[in-house]
Length: 64
Image (cartoon, rainbow, N blue to C red):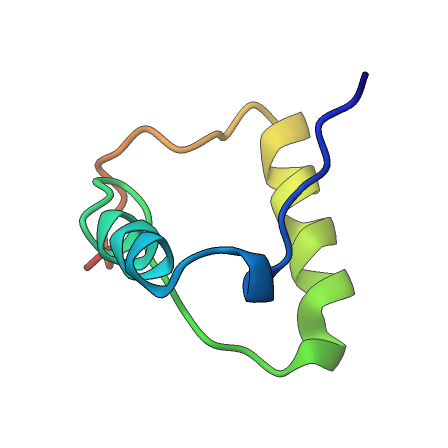
């Protein structure tokens, strides 16, 4: 049986807050807000980056 992914409304606020805090503390990753219509292009850039063997190493410049 597949586990259903919880929608945002089904996740308790405290759990959402904890997930957001954990994302902000991730080393080698940056959280940004972008216009929704740019997501397909951003996903393609990330996929191309991974295919080229340039995955994240955790020491990329510009990460906050």
